[in-house]
Length: 277
Image (cartoon, rainbow, N blue to C red):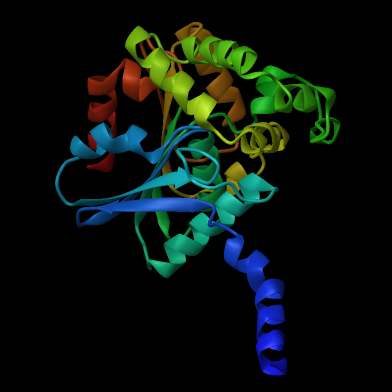
């Protein structure tokens, strides 16, 4: 009986480790040179399915989804560092080399972070409407220390009723694509996100500033930018924020908002395949 009680006690003490969920979920497709696909915030890995289908032969795709989104159980905070750490762990565990990373929005931030941490493994980057310091674009001059997790705004969003959150999600989705038929999909992804992950993960992104570590990135990089609100304004932002990146090409998608792969899919596939070749 004593042995049984001790075993039960050990199980109780160990239960938090068993209940902790992984930060990423990866689907592996095909064979060939590895291409790691990283979606943006609240977006499932399935956003890349059409891109993968349009890749030329000889590529192995690894499409990633994040904890707290797409029905995947959430993890504890801090969220972004856990995602980054497990992606690096995945690359090492799978023994991937000569990797291309294609990252949209926050996925582009992760691509930069990983390329700086593993320069000998990452050979190419495709950054899709991704900004190294989103805070500087949205709140010029505001430092990371000013951004707090327990802010009044975060508390407001955490306590927001479903109807109000739905309205906010629709407004955000409308600003991210010119294709009206995709607005409902983007809205659903935002609504289905774990609310804590949505609030505190976004705070992680506002605190993030990768402009200095761009100097550590040796991978050849293609930056694909959306033309919204105008190609000239957007290009100027990319050129300024990516000043420290050595090897880069910037191309702007015409008539597109944030989700370039949805707004201009054929142009996007052409740019990806040309760069991979």
